[in-house]
Image (cartoon, rainbow, N blue to C red; front, side, top):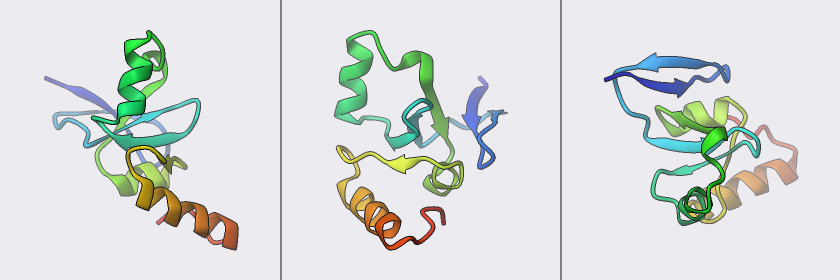
Length: 91
């Protein structure tokens, strides 16, 4: 089986390994695959067309995505604090 993951450059690439993180291309948010907010949106029929997957968190950050406030609150707060300080939000 081949999966399609998003790389640090934001481009899709084939992978034999399933991604560890999911994201939303339009909102540029990433989070856990079992994120309650994402699963709720998917159940309502949304989100799926813009769903992306990442091999790891570093790749999601490098591609310009931010942590989900719902399923990754500690990561989100750290990201937000870095942005407010003017620091780069990528690794």
